[in-house]
Image (cartoon, rainbow, N blue to C red; front, top):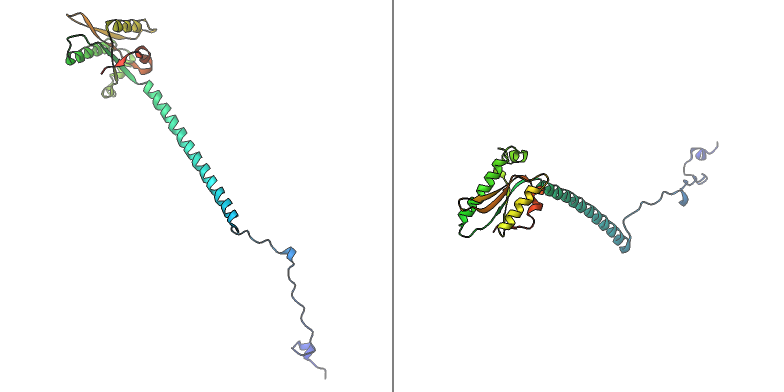
Length: 198
């Protein structure tokens, strides 16, 4: 009777050894995943790159904010130049009290507004929606000649700038000049040489 141990494949001494499993070669192994920096130099380089990126982002953000602020400032400046304003120039005659001087300016301002009451700028200046936000610039003339020269320059402008030279009666003394309301940019050049009333 033939020995059946070889056919069964049990652990008999005459059985053949099982072939070894095939192992992948070093050439076919997948590349190792990149890990964190392995040296102080690598860590320093990574930190420097991150810091540079953050600085660039911060600079870009600051530039954007500055650009917006600059545009806003320009818009505000343009709006200020277009603001309707009334210029008053006062002379300080001898013997006039502060109250009398204020009254002269008020006379001239009201007369200038009344005389130009149908002009678009005056109507806008006195409109109910804006009457509580009037703008005036009060300046001082050094002498009567300066006041007369200013009145002549306003009258000679093209087109003429509406204004009122107030001459107090019965003294017959010129005490104040007031323009009708105009955009600030229109009036400013005529008054550049005068100082604020203080």
